[in-house]
Length: 461
Ligand SMILES: *[C@@H]1O[C@H](CO)[C@@H](O)[C@H](O)[C@H]1NC(C)=O
Ligand SMILES: *[C@@H]1O[C@H](CO)[C@@H](O)[C@H](O)[C@H]1NC(C)=O
Ligand SMILES: *[C@@H]1O[C@H](CO)[C@@H](O)[C@H](O)[C@H]1NC(C)=O
View 1 (cartoon, rainbow, N blue to C red):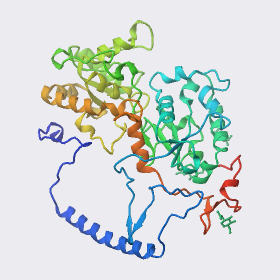
View 2 (view 1 turned 45 degrees about the vertical axis):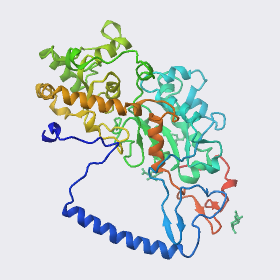
View 3 (view 1 turned 135 degrees about the vertical axis):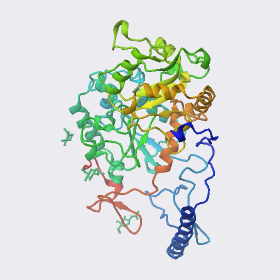
View 4 (view 1 turned 120 degrees about the vertical axis):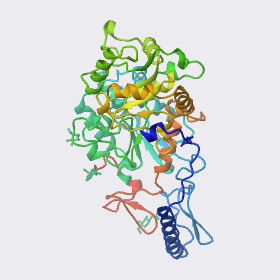
């Protein structure tokens, strides 16, 4: 509790670093760094003095600035990492180029409408595709691409009956078998979006075929009643949930935030219980404390369901918006809270959040153990001074643009955040167990067939 209620001024992680006192551990760490840097530099010097360039000029090696360069015998690391600016080239597969992509986007008979897939919490799978199509980082040349984006709207297509699980699995495999570049890297430079709690499990055999690819998903934990999670912390990227456009649009959102003093409730939770323990506890709690906690027992449809506007009008009427776990650990409510300016309180222990490399979520939200949902939680929230709440809200206002699926030409958007994360992860060189290279940079397969002659269907995985 001490750190939660600490009144020290805290820096906002995305913009500044706080100074840490220099401890013994730091000193030892610094010494180690100096020593190891010295050795690494020596080794590199010896190695690189033998050749002026480590990038052979061949058809497969790009002369972009993504590799190491040697200046007067000293290796210069690229701006990559985050660097000072984005410099990425992403190839977006065309729906007509690969047999099967259209099925993954519009269903087996092409009847699933993109407009229908754009709405709702899973709209991110369409939006990311559309925004990358318009992106200045898109390239039409595969040979110069750092990354490859594979469009698919399967979550929506499946929900609307456009494909069943078996067809989704088979169609993905068919699609991948037509991509020589996927084969070249074993999928390491390919990007897939899975916008729901099931994550990559939507593609049943994902772990065989795309376990090395970048997976963009809002879901960090879901094992989906399977033994394994499809999310890998170091490779995959958490994306924000798709908040209703009417709330995120430039100018005025449809429902405006209320001043703190005008809010009727301390906290709320406005969603269905779906038999989930945490949610049921909240509904119970609201019966004990109806003045503090708004938590109606909502249903999927009928009079006990809120319309969109009503929903946001209720959501804005509390200081804290509780976001308990549902079917899976990620929750759209967490992102919505920022747009009605209530402080999100995450009650979902396994949740992962987007852009954790650059956002300090303790500055803009609260995470509380889901095992401690009860009067204690309400007491704690009631003890937080309005001044602190205002602080969290105003910091949240500054970063929420990262949860909006706007274009990368905007100064701040979810897609921009995703591109920065991708830039950190992009590799200069691609290989796999079935990819080999020769003295002159030629890339060949096990039969020594040159890459340019690889013909689909490619063997998989
Ligand atoms: C997915 O499709 C591939 C290729 O058709 C097949 O080998 C695999 O067994 C399928 N996976 C499941 C879980 O059905
Ligand atoms: C990825 O799939 C391949 C092929 O099935 C398998 O050999 C490999 O162990 C898998 N890797 C991971 C990290 O699951
Ligand atoms: C590289 O060497 C191999 C083997 O000698 C040869 O077959 C291939 O054509 C060469 N590639 C290029 C780009 O010159």
